[in-house]
Length: 226
Ligand code: DX5
Ligand code: ZN
Image (cartoon, rainbow, N blue to C red; front, side, top):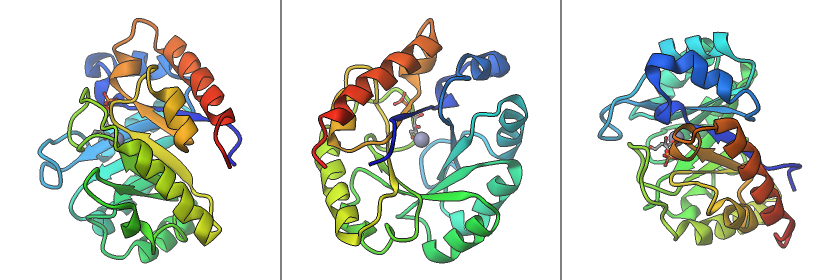
């Protein structure tokens, strides 16, 4: 079991006119989650390497880059060069996960694989052995502020079983609709990393939400049966 629950605030919900201030407000987080959207894999366009480089200069918190793009095999390395510490690519989009994992690992960058709500856990059968992290989407990717999909709990448990069968323990991350009201249950179901955008950045005190979320999740994790 991984040691503590990690919190990864998604800057999609930050105030972009005050991004430096918002990054400073989450200096106690374990990651900064950066959502890269290409307007093709998902029906929204966000930001690219320029923002990753700027955030890297502003913080020592590791960068967790979530790539919602059609061609991650081609573009993931741009983000490694821009300062990403962990890059997650979608199972539905990546062509050769194992080759990409080698290329990122050579550069000292970790790799994650992501599944959409409609993608079954069984599609990760050949992926869990080569990645450092698995991200389970709990909303359809593209936008912040959506409602959490309850079927995620079952997928987390199924994913833990799959990892146990393979004798591997990648970090398990959940993204979308995560808040103080489900952090505990998510950790109990097997999540190690919680991504939260609106719940953290729309709150008056983001640092307090991070602290409370970590605490609730730690309680949930203690009740996990593994
Ligand atoms: C959705 C993104 C999420 C999003 C989460 O496509 O991958 O990271 O920012 O936002 P909230 O926490 O507001 O659901
Ligand atoms: Zn994300």
